[in-house]
Image (tube, rainbow, N blue to C red; front, side, top):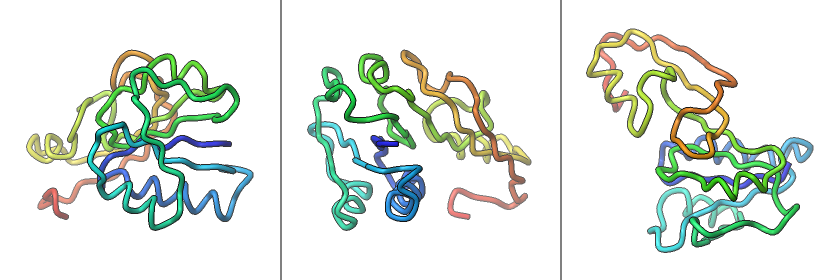
Length: 157
């Protein structure tokens, strides 16, 4: 698949690293990979990684951007902080997926881990959902990897 990656910070880097590895070692899974960094967004860890790995970096005006028909198959989103526009998703044959660090539907939205820790939750998860065309973190649940939170866990551990 030809993958557009949408991520904006260190939280999204493990997903980008995995996709970059798949592009190199399993091209039947990911034959092409580009990082989408919205126009005007500061270069951060994701763009630095993309540059170091020689990945294509696209800097479109996100609200009005629709990639050329047939150029891309799927959007992969991790900690992007912006809604991927419906028109863009509609042009992707496989749609889009979002990796979210929480036990969805609990703790929708940004920074779910601090809330889980503050509430004293004993468990957390990584959830993979379909991208909803108009709302954050409300797509159909595809996968969930639950794990126990250590009693003394903090954001840094």
